[in-house]
Image 1 (cartoon, helix red, strand yellow):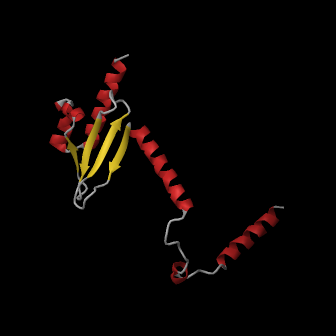
Image 2: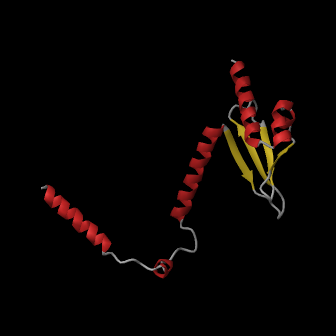
Length: 145
C-alpha cells in the first residue's frame, strides 16, 4: 500500500512538472473588470469595517477621516478615545499633503496637561502623545469608580 501512494505522488509530481508555463503576455490578456463588482465592493467594505474595529480595540481610538474638500487643503483626522469622559472629547489632527500630522486646537486639546503636549512640541511623537492621553484617560476613568 505504501508503494501505491508513493507511485501516485510521483505521478502527481511529474504531471505538475509537465504543466505548461504561461508567458507573461498570456497573463496580461486575462480580462479584468473595469468597474468594481458589487461583490468586490461588499468584500472591501467588510474588510474596512474589520480593520476599523481592530484598530479601535488595539489602539483604544476610533479614527475618522474627512477628506479634503479642496486641492491642497488638509484632511481632517478625528480620534476619539474609548476612555473619553465626554462624547465631544476628540483630538483633531490635520493631515497635510506632505503626510505630516498637526494637532488642531480644540477644547479637549486645550485641557491637556502640558506634560502630554510636550510629546508633540519637543519630539513630534504622535504615538507617544496618544498613548499618554490613553493612560491619563484610563486612570481618570478607573479612579472615578
